[in-house]
Image (cartoon, rainbow, N blue to C red; front, side, top):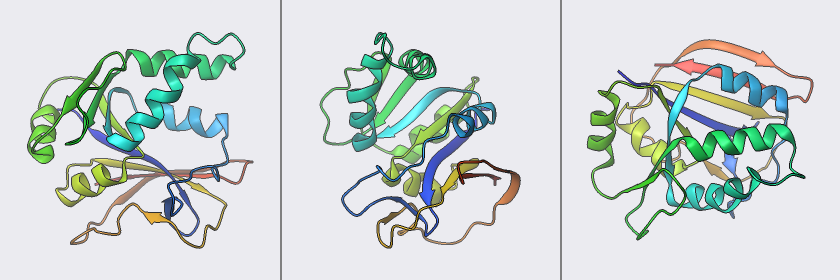
Length: 186
């Protein structure tokens, strides 16, 4: 059985992006990325349309860019090779290599894919997908990078959450950048 792991960066006041979708407030730290990477073993990524378009517009070109940092090129190659599943009712095609477009009952699709043999599945960003899968209790683990920034307003991952879920803290790590990595499981 495969696990679904949500990975998101959030501000101290709980927002994963600003009111206009901005994410320029992230404090990027290679140590945080390395630690988060070690906490999961994904071969598949779930995306909503907006996050997919953002990743698709950036990562494919980084892989072959000689002026990009070696770590970014390695990440780009890994992302290019992974299976990317995009949940969207408005997109007509997903052109990034190894991408698949899914339109329909997200919960049913995720229940089925979780039953398959394989590595973990990760969700980056994609707040609407996180909300839907969280509501259906289809997310097994949550990785939050809490960034030491107060936005004051923005978009919450769980603003439309119904019901409550109690998670168990699996691990926590702090970093010199001020970021804190919180790892929870259902």
